[in-house]
Length: 446
RNA sequence: UCCGGAGUAGCUCAAUGGUAGAGCGGGUGGCUGUUAACCACUAGGCUGGGGGUUCAAGUCCCUCCUCCGGAGCCA
Figure 1 (tube, protein in one colour):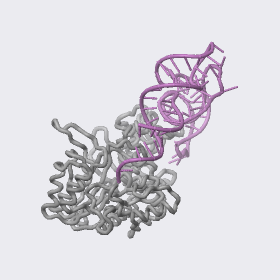
Figure 2 (cartoon, helix red, strand yellow):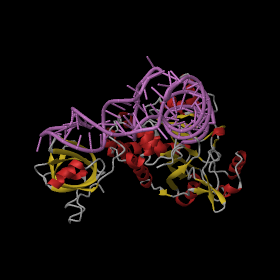
Figure 3 (cartoon, protein in one colour):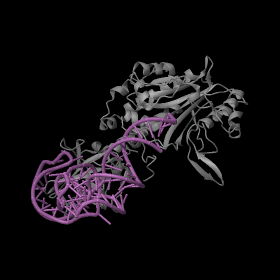
Figure 4 (cartoon, chains in turn green, brown):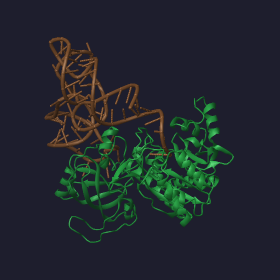
C-alpha cells in the first residue's frame, strides 16, 4: 500500500490533484503534489507557518508563507489545530532544515475537519490517561512504531510456517471445556449451556495434524486470571504450530529457527522503527541458532549458584526466569519440567517418569517465557489415566482421546505469545503497549 | 486475593494545619526558517466521594472508590 504513489489523478471536491503518500514524497522532488493527512504539530514565525503533517506512511513539514498563498490558505494555516484532517497542495523540495530532509512548499491547503481541542499534547502524560485515550494515543510516533513492528512479527510468523509447508487451521474461540484445566477461563452463556473462551487452540490443532501433517493456529486467547504484572493481558494473541511425527528435539529445533527468523525479519525490515524506539539492536543480532538447551534441573542449579531461594519441584517465577535467562546472550530453552506442574497432555520422559517432555523458551534481557510447548502424550490408556488424575471430565475429552485410537503418532508443538515477543523485541517495559487495545484486569475501555 | 504507592486546572506536577500555584495545552497579540520554537498578556479549581478532629483541613484521622507498581497465578 505504501508504495502506490498516485491514487487520484482527478480533481474532486475537497481534494487536489495527484495524491502522494508522504513516504514517497522524496521521489517527487520538484513536483507539485497533494498530501492528505493529519496535523501533527505546528510552529510559526510571523508570516510563516510550519505545519507537520502525518499520513500514516510518514511525516512531512509543510511551509505556508503569507506572500506565496491566498488569504484563505494563510488563515487556514493560522487557525488549524492539532489533529485536524488536512489536504495540502504544494511543491516537494529538499531542505536540510526540514525533519526528514524534504518539505512541502504549500500553494493551497484546506481543512477537511477542524479538530476539537486535542487531549494529548506534545508534553508528558501518565499511563492511565493515555490508556483512557488509547484510540487517540495510537497516533503518536512511538505507538505507530510499535504497531509496525507487531505487524512485522505477525507477518514473519505466518511467512515462516507457510514457507515450511504448514497449513493454517483456525481453531474455535468458544469451547465446551477447559483445554488444560490449569487456568481460569472466561465463562459465557451459549444458548442455555456454559461455554468458555479459548485459552489455546492446541487440542484442535492436534486433531488437524492427522489431516494436514504440519499445522498452525493463530488467534486470540483468553485467560481470566487476576494477574497484574507487566507480562499479562486477559486477551492476547498466540501462534501455535503442531507437527506430526515430531519429538521434543524436533520441537526445539523448530522453536529456535522460528524465533531467530522473527528477529531477523524485524531487523531487516523495521530498522527505522527500532531506531525510533531507541532499541539497542546488538542483543537482537545475536539471536541465532543454536540456542542453549538446559534441563529444568540445570536451570534450578543456576538459581542455586546465584543464591536465589528456590524449592525444587516448583515452577519458575518471573524473577527466576530473569536470573536464568540472564546467564545467556540469546534465548535459552529449558526442558523436562516436573510433570506435576505441567498440563495433563504432556508426554513423560521415558528415562524419568517424574519429568515431562515440555520446553519453555526464555527471552533474554529479562523478558522471560515467550514460548511454552512440548511433546504430547500419544498413548490412549496413559492419556485416559492423566485426564482422571487431573480431575478432568472424561466426556469432554472423548474426541481428544479418539485421536489416540485412530492412528496415533508421536507429535509436538508449542505456543508463542505475540505480545511478550513484541515487548521483548521493542524492549518495552510492559505488554500493554504491544497491542492496539489491551485488555487487562482493570482495562476494558476503550 | 495479598503488600506497597498515588488521586490538586484539560495534562504533568507544586503548595510548615492559616488567601491554591507553575509548566504545557486553550484564547488574544507579536515575530519570514521554526525543530516538543520563542516573547507578552489572558481565561481556567466542589483539591476522588463520604464522615471526623480543629478557631481553621489540599495537608491530620477513619472509611469507600479509582488507578499505578510488585507478589501470587500464568503465556
